[in-house]
Image (tube, rainbow, N blue to C red; front, top):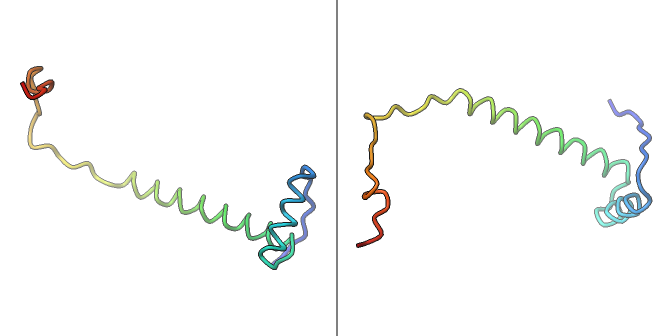
Length: 77
């Protein structure tokens, strides 16, 4: 269901919106609505990916890894 919304923005931003709408062949209202929908979808996709990442099990290590200073800083000597 579409609803109306009144926004307040800087004059320069409104000029940019009007220019973008003309470039895309849509109304300012449609352009802003599309921008909001895209922002919402990106946010939802981010949080979905984050929740999936939290469920990933860490890869177990074969054992403790130890290095000595000489091996770590070997500069081809």
